[in-house]
Length: 149
Image (cartoon, rainbow, N blue to C red; front, top):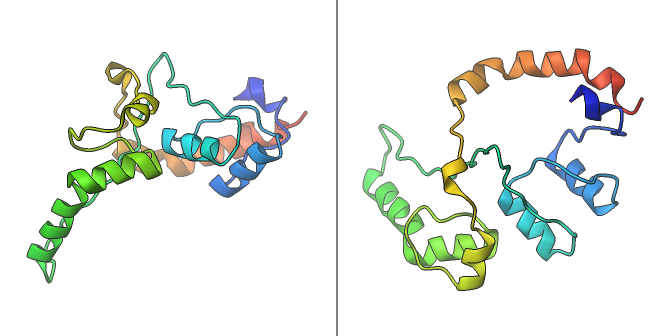
């Protein structure tokens, strides 16, 4: 990050700021989700999503039955609905989310969502949760001051 910081006018602090940077062409590359990249490409931004050769993480979409829920059967029914072929297909075709089930997708959508799944790296979210504050502090001390210089 120290190497690229000098070439960057700024580091985006939100998805909205990043999207604006991409739209006004003040950003040339970024780490972003496949879904966001493909939806922005549909909106006219000249983006290509590339899954890193070294591997990358998949951002999970999660639905969970909460312990002690007032209506557990309704919650289970809703989760079943989310996992239905209809909804999984909609997620893939409209939002570019990779399906959680083995649903048959239209060929063009399946091709857009294709990547080498053997390269998926599972992040340790406990570590991320515990370390985020210190990582941000380090970024603000070591990288932010040299941005754009």
